[in-house]
Amino acid sequence: MKVRPGSHLANLLYLLSVSGEFPSKSLNILGDERTMKAMVHKMESAHDFRLNSDDTILRTKLFQLSGKSGDRTIRLYKGALGILNELHPNALEYYMKAFPYNRFSGNQSCITRNHRVGEAMVVCMMAGINVFPYMLPKLQKESIQHIVLKEPCFYISRHIKSIMESEYNKTKFTRVAGLMFCPGVSYAVYNARNDVMNWSGDGEIRAMMDLSAIVRMNAANFLSKTGHIHEVSSVLLMGTDANAAMKTLIGSDTSRKQHTRMDKIYPYVHFVPLNRDGADLVRILTLPDWNERLLRVLFKPEQINRGYSSVEFDARYDGRYAFSHLDSDIARIIRFRDVLKIHNSERGAEGREQMQFDVVCFTWQAEFLRKYLGGLVRLRPVDMGRVLKVLRI
Image 1 (tube, one colour):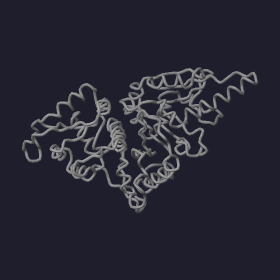
Image 2 (cartoon, one colour):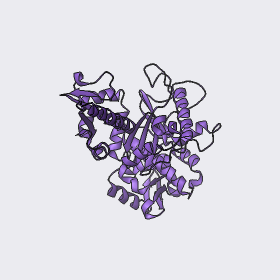
Image 3 (tube, rainbow, N blue to C red):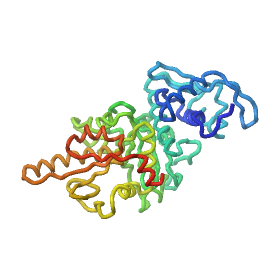
Image 4 (cartoon, rainbow, N blue to C red):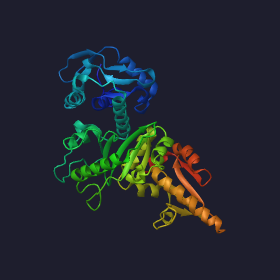
């Protein structure tokens, strides 16, 4: 047996070479859940693998599972580590430095942290983004340079922390799953899974500032037309539940520190579901000038709004206003709902007609928006596949 490049088996091996472990219940992100679980189960038994490096036969198991049935974690079997050399010349060396002696902590918080990073990596992998540290240029903090690749790339939090570790405590980046570089923008990546994140704002403000410093030091003359980027202002907030993600944003409403809310630290918070729809969304959000390209897909040039309004909208046609949620920016949808409620209330008190809104969304966003926006707007769901086709992705 050989590990075929591009196969489900190869993808899982690549993933574990960096994340160390991965939750069994999230295998559906990589492929068909039944197929993936059958493959993992099969590889819990010993098989003969032909190694390309020296044409020898290695008989070994590939995976071992531990934990309770509801939250089992997949790890590499110790005898299978030699197969990492089949993936990349530096894969085994990286793995051994990250996970010495192939040992893992039994502490649930450590396992969960690895799972959060692994799931974020898979979504980015499925979007065609390079996520493997041993294939990426090493970041630095000595001077302003152009280090990163020209195409989108994702650096996991462990790599980011290794740059700052001599000056900062080890808990600084525990909530950040990683940092993504794209043409025109950079994203801090968080993974809430199905939880409401207990957001500790002061630490996250410092984390945002440190991420911004890393961007400035390693992406000179790359991320903006002016050649400068002052801060990381956008987040990819991954998770299984948009409602939980929304509660993460507004959960600190009663706090005295309103400046520490997630959408105060990062004005743009794009919710990315932990599935194939999320991977397709990431593909869109990493395109150059993605926002303008989405508007051109949805509206005619003369319909697109280029001005200012007290209530934010993207286009106007037939006496109605249109707001696009294809970017899945939940911070923006919060601002939109709050302002629209106030605006229409004032219009109603004055006896004027209320603004009629269409909200354009992907079909998988419709249920969440129907509950959140109620009867304030009319939804216009569009198919993700159609949008990708028009964008030529």
